[in-house]
Image (tube, rainbow, N blue to C red; front, top):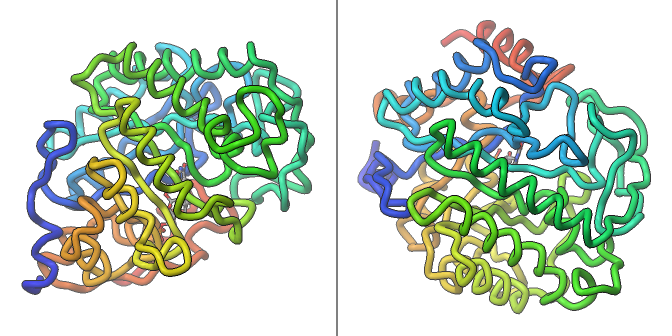
Length: 370
Ligand SMILES: Cc1cc2nc3c(=O)[nH]c(=O)nc-3n(C[C@H](O)[C@H](O)[C@H](O)COP(=O)(O)O)c2cc1C
């Protein structure tokens, strides 16, 4: 570890909760839950490896929130009933025992659903077929189907689903929840101009497209109270559209980040292809904009494998925490490696092939030399 990367190992605070360093595991879907959406021993071992590897914070993969339209993937874990929520307790206990914290990511698929064990079709802000193809490494194949446009009642039910999921997460002992507003899933579909063609109060101008975030954050905060970490994740690009940029540019960033802070989130998690790059022409990074306009702690994510890149964001006051995705997949002990030997393995997509599940992932890791 060099003097430049020391900042990664300084303790931090998230909503008053002590986090032992600035290193978080980014949420990563691993399609490895049991058939009923509960988690089993394989997943306990997987999450434990990050905690023992030195990460101060773990954000879980996206958990579906209800038994209506939220499920996205076959073998995705859910938090749509007490049994699913409680199945996380061995993971939570194991992670907390190492001094690390764990936040549940709450996710609603919207139009990007590739599998739903409860409903025969998907639902989204508007009946627009998602761009691109379903993801084979999550058991998908071919085009996405055309979702049904949600009624206002459907929107209210989806919000209620998140609220109840957050309450279950709290009951199960998670340290907090993160609302998945990024990467093209339901909440992001409301924000995005081409997937939201509504002409009611949830569509049209940015204020209307943000209304679901406003109602959702206020409702979840009211339900869980102040002593439970509540975050929200944002991105510009999507799993099925890597080119999209917020159509109102930097003005959208200002409005969005101010609004979610006013509604009561404790942190913002931004993800970009490269977290250090300007989010808009001539602007600061998305993380820095989130920090400036919200005044909240920001977790920055995207494109960083090496400690120097991660530390740069902290040392230049652009972020408070860094979350690692692919670098953590191949180095579940990334913090310990950096502080002890400095030797990191390089990520290779072969690790997620033919499926992004834990079986293929652990076989790949076992085949590595160190
Ligand atoms: C296998 C895999 C699964 C992912 N699943 C999720 C997810 O469930 N929720 C989410 O918000 N992002 C998800 N992501 C995106 C990551 O959190 C992260 O934003 C992305 O990998 C870029 O960061 P990186 O460059 O550090 O990998 C996933 C990424 C990968 C590689």
